[in-house]
Image (cartoon, rainbow, N blue to C red):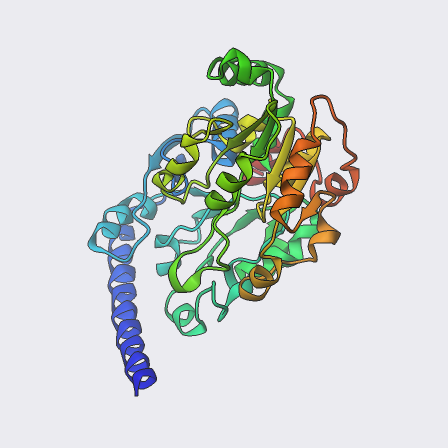
Length: 387
């Protein structure tokens, strides 16, 4: 009886959602009537952060440099089914380019104009944990019934990925043809070869540390996003694990914790009470890579970018079986990473205490598999878009 009520409730919910989509499409069509696409208009929705950074910032700066005629409209989208979403219709109706690095609901609700390029830079290197259509009907992912109403990740005209090896996975995740997926690279890693940027960022970060902290072995920890409630992939609480780990670390070890942008940072407050852990929200994970001596994650694809520094890296995954069952990985963890795979808290403690400054680590296999090129990527992307 309970299942029947839930089924009826979902049916009603999807009918309301379908009606919303119909109204939204009609409003979009009205916004397009008599208004040509503006050939110099670029719309950049910021879903993951409050200001330009990462892939969006790298491509934006290259566009500004090489195409000064462009006019940029940077917006903070609502990305939820509500009346507020209608405010963005006029903006996207006239856009020549909509530049994304994540989910953007409005373009999945409409039938975009043929003159509009919807460009997905995506925020992750490589193909690690499953997402999009690869997770349909799993505990983590969307239901096929929902996708019948809202075809997420649809209408992309260009998708840029880190290497040719990634194309099959992104074609599956975005449910799209492979010939619109370009293995150019991850534009934000251009900053790693910009010496002026590297030196400036290092100096800025080190100024935030005490003299004692600057001399410590800095272990960067950046876990992936984890869903909540009924969609959560496992019961692992990374905050609790780190608090229990901190008291067993050598005195010269400093943990730098950078939380995922989707997680409310109040969730990490308990970590700030621990003297050998700092929680940072000012600098990005990529910024901290410039000063870190080692890197630990669970299932974040940031580990592929850290591989470019040839320093020690590891996965803390005591929940590997549960995570794989409820969300899934595109490949076996041992096959896609050269990092140490830590399955217990004691293994985590031992690995951290074994680290020291100046260590070298062979990550050539990871780099070769995950990156087609590691410099001038933003330039290559902009050239591709303006052919």
